Image 1 (cartoon, rainbow, N blue to C red):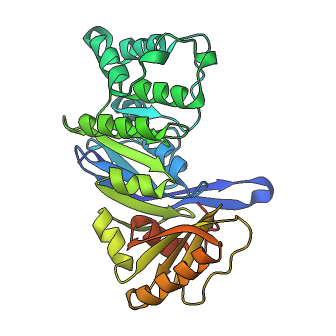
Image 2 (image 1 turned 120 degrees about the vertical axis):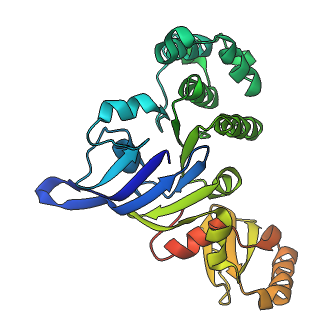
Image 3 (image 1 turned 180 degrees about the vertical axis):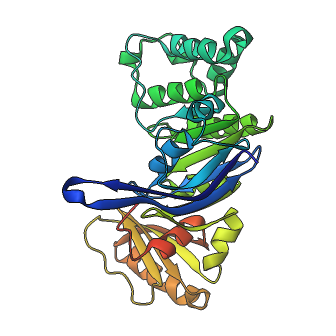
Length: 310
């Protein structure tokens, strides 16, 4: 077992002695060679948990074991075992991606550093056009990919990626997930911290849904989806982002801009398609699709009374 988080609680005290429970009795385990998704909206407690795994913050209760030893007793050891891509952009200044990744590789691997790995990563992610371009002149996506390479150039036994695909174009996102999968072939484990539910479903072996500091559910994607296995989902592209009347038969719904997702009873499929066709004919809906339940549907149902949007 790479990581064992056991009943971890962290409470922060703000102004006026107001208390905020960032992590509430969280337990999870991550095996060798596993990609584990930590899924939740901003402020759910994901980054606080990561900082405790890295020994940057001490839990108020509970314990974290990394490769069989407590992080609380050896926080520096934890940071030597883990490789991290933070949520914020890494300031590259005048360094080029190739210089930045090479520098980190030499710092982490020392004499074991192999410069060919830099070329391999850049080729795998199709980053050649940016390799020797100054950091200040790079796009957000290129900076994000550079930060990812810095995290995995000499990976520890546990790689923590906090929103790794923010600003990255769809094509290179696919390349990035393949590189992550290749990492796990030698036993490296990965924690994917994200609020991108669709992405998580395709990338992880297991996932935990966290909301307001608590883990609401965890398991394989199939196990999580089984919580709404008796539902179907319809995804709609609305003609306008203005108010749209949600049908009364919708079991739940979630709207993000012009994208609307509604959960429906399988027995209502025929009438739902007729309803959608009518709205297409009236110009209210651009297009629609119908599919089985996903992790996103489970997420919406579990947090429906607590989450406004993703």
